[in-house]
Length: 459
Image 1 (cartoon, rainbow, N blue to C red):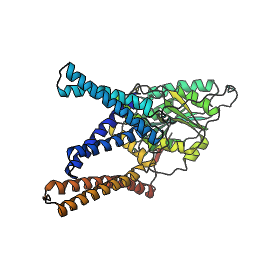
Image 2: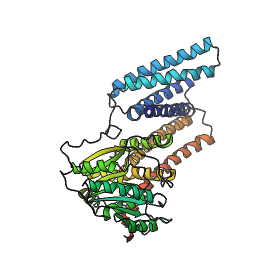
Image 3: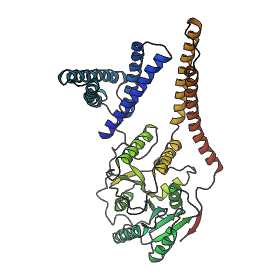
Image 4: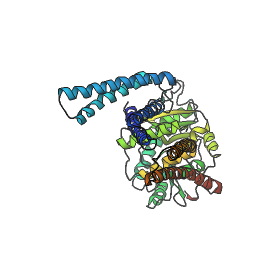
């Protein structure tokens, strides 16, 4: 409900900007009077608000015409409530016009939101990626002796994790002892720390841990290649019947590994670890992350909602992943494309045990953009739409300028009428060139076929 209401408010702000912009354009370029300009602006604003609320805010697949008629009805009721509130405050409390208008916003917003949610867009989509995901149920006949122990490998990418690795190793050692005692994994199962070119003493610590613990192994990359490449290096290098990837910071609940193994033994090739909630995140991170998952879903990218890189993969799934040779890695989007049987297991995500996050805001934005441009061509198609709209707008302005010059005496040369369209068109062109350049850069890096990682040492 909170996320939906937030999107509804954003649409309201965008609707105001579009409506006012249309009014000013109609008054300045088309020379419409204030009445006609407002009529055009409100019409464009209503259509814009309806389409965006239908496709993004409430994700409705209702009939277009019927839902639009209901939308107009709700809009009329909300406007009547707004006007009534303004008149009531003005006549009974004698407040100034600005305060009366501010008071009228509340019933208008509440009635609009509730009316659209429960009346206008009643048939709302419930995509599998939007929180409707259900954990898989284990077969009742699955017992400890119904399946032989498996050789398990756990891949842990590491970058400057010297403060957290001792505790991570301790918890994994306890988990391995339990799993071996329950005959779920074999004694030769192991943990593989992938050192992604750390600049602190991470690799020396890994070597020390490998000497102390028989199940600890290490893979050292020759330089920092990024989290996704380090993770892929581990997945494609280590042995094991099943491979689990997990971060070193202990935010992912390691006890979920037991459920992952049980689901693998029940016949699933891929088991996704999915966050049960985002209560440990700040409001900003929670809002941006959920919005990003929904954006990817809207762009047609197949992705598991609230899933990062905590998952189990069977050996056939890993071998299938080996066939994907792309350089621009976004494993959260690649893994679902493998097509093997999969299941979900939910867990509570904790705070980072120690150290600093390796995904600051800048890195998160870069990773988000990587996911969009690696799996969706929608931004390129949006360029086509933007180009068409700009062309139509430019044609209208050109026709207006010619008509003014030929049929009236109002054609006064001016700076604004010349420079503003140039800036507008120039800005759109630069935006489009930037998006196309991003895709060309990816093509450039893919065609060179450079190795995604280089392993310097293994222990």
